[in-house]
Amino acid sequence: MAPNNSPSLGDPASGTNFRPFRRRPAGRMPERARSQEVDGTEGLLICFEGLDGSGKSTQARLLAEALADEAALFKEPSSGPYGKKIRESAGKGRLSPLSEHRLFLADRAHDLRFNILPALKRGKTVILDRYIVSNLAYQGALGLSLSAVMEDNSPFPPPDLVILLELDAAEALKRIRRSRPSAELFEEEGYLNKVAAVLKNLDYPALIRMDALLPPETLAEGILKIVNLLKESAL
Image 1: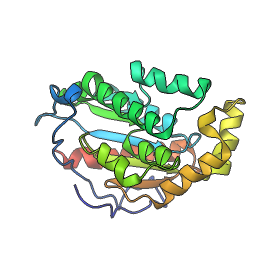
Image 2: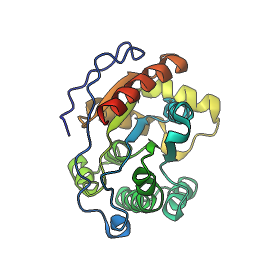
Image 3: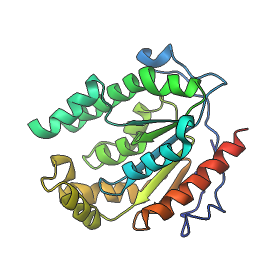
Image 4: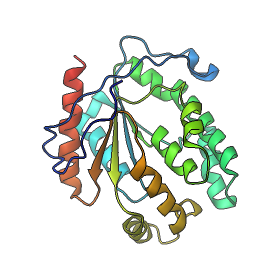
């Protein structure tokens, strides 16, 4: 995969400076996912990242709608058994950073085996609402080593494109409180500030930063242009 030298897009609707990336081989998968390794017929893996409230879920949905039958949309935490445990922890009292990290890894392996890799093998463009970058940012903000989190994620297939919607923590909290008056433990102000700091300084392959304050339709137009460039480069 090419290094992360793609620009922050001041005008994301243009997509003119985007340089497409191709995924490196997936390598050895965890035991639970290994039987579904991606072969040469794989589709593209596109991830949306950002703070809660950045609009990433909206943009993931809009891209899936634009691509229609070509797309498969998934999210983390998943609806699988490990994802349910992660969501339950927000209401019962947060797990230790390491225990939470291990649950995210287990959830990712399960989702890859049963959902993501089968969709890629069918040639779908898989759209993920959160993936490895969220793991780095949210667990890194809890004090885990970013290099250790990255190493733990090394068996998983890296994305062809990561779209990071940038928004400061104060604005993210305003949006969260408007849509969800009782914010979860995952969304405390001090914690979101730490997550935002990790995201701001993160150097990650195939990552493009976009301004989450732009109108949703402007973002969606720019993202679709970037994805079409990426798909053309894969032909």
